[in-house]
Image 1: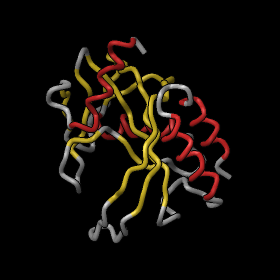
Image 2: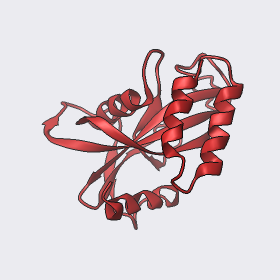
Image 3: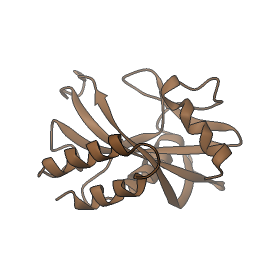
Image 4: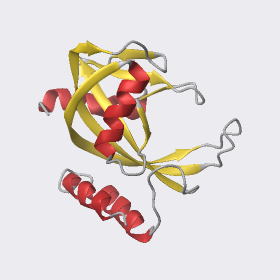
Length: 169
C-alpha cells in the first residue's frame, strides 16, 4: 500500500542518514493502512517546503503550536508528497513555487494533542522538499503569517537546511 512512499525514501539512502531513512521505510512497510489524508489516527504522511529567497528561508507561524515552522501539511488521498508540499506552500504563504523539487530529508514528527480539532496526539512521516520560488507569481492572500528567516533566526531544528545553499542543491 505504501510502496511508492518507501520508493521515494530510497532516494535519500547514501546521504549520511541511512539509519533514519531505513527506520522510516520499515515503519511504512509495517503499516498496511492508507496513510494519506487524516483517516489513520496514529500515523499520517505530511510534506514540507524548503524555499529560499537569497540566504533566507520561508517559515509560517503555526496556528496551534504558535512557533515558526516550515510551510507544510497533510498529503491528501491520491496525492504525492511533492504535490502536497507545493500546494501547502502556495496556500500558506500565497506564493507559488515550481512544479519540480528535490527530496532532501524525511523525519518522524510527533504532533501534540489538539483539543480544538479533537485530534489525539499522533505522528507524521514528513517528506521535506527543496523547492524554487517563482518570483513573478504571487497569489492574492496567505492563510498564515509567514516570514523569511536567516540561519541565525531560524529555529534550531531547521538550521541544518541552510547547508543546502552551500551544496548548490
